[in-house]
Image 1 (tube, rainbow, N blue to C red):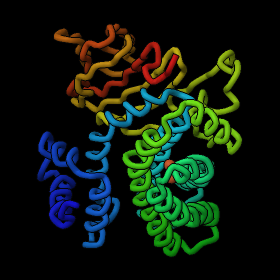
Image 2: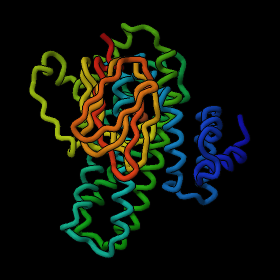
Image 3: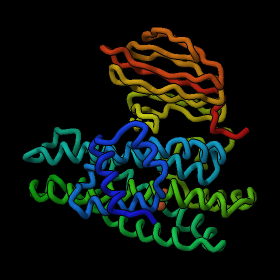
Image 4: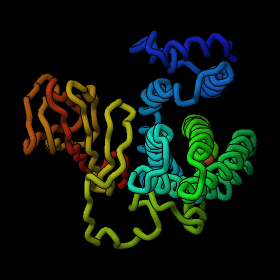
Length: 367
Ligand SMILES: [Fe+2]
Ligand SMILES: [Fe+2]
């Protein structure tokens, strides 16, 4: 095991930006995920507030992103692990939003029923409580199968973490519902403590599952027919309201014939492993649509995609780079990129850029 104190010092420097870019990436890539969790915990013991580790979380995710994409491609939509990883993406976006709302609400001096943040808090707490079905599929379907095959340590720790998180999530929802009747100063203290506990521990929990538990499960359970059985057991437990539609039971068998009206503005915004903010618009076997939102001057670094991609510029101005060619684009423009050629996006210095990235077929779908 690495020296946790040394590691904690390095992480502190990455978090503050003293170490960045390639060097930060190299350090993070070489850290064992368990050591990483321990070092983070050490920083918190030494007085770093959980929300101050955000820079680190973004750095983790950048390293993690390609590994997770690999898991999604290997498993494909409908596979129990693919569903769990996709649900984690949504839970992480709820945590980002909770962090922002908590900050704003603790900045107020009194309860204000016209402030929409109170409704948002209720909605987010409700979604986190709803994630219980995700944990139940892990505890009742995935973990027992891993335990039968001799992997007992990680599932036990994950169960304990679920147990720690559960009452806190319920308490958050209670706070959100009861705020009109509470002393506001007391509400703020309780909200800060509860939200920070959930945000830090749930991010850490998800990180461990994505990097340790799920890869271990895929290795320990090689038989496709066993995953079929686990899928049926997971279906019986049910899915969360935020589970991507095509993965859930209701959408099996013909629901793709149903009309779907998607309002971009209503979709949650998450941070992509590559850096920019994104909205997951549509995931079907034949097509995957993502809305990439770049701030002025921000770029989506060049990367390859194993399928053809159409970029539709929804708002703003910038450049689209395909291979060694670059074009200036504005709202209404459409650019086609053949598969396996590096492509990237860059917002103009004085304009944000919103692009719909349409991949066809969906590269994470199995045919
Ligand atoms: Fe879990
Ligand atoms: Fe999970």
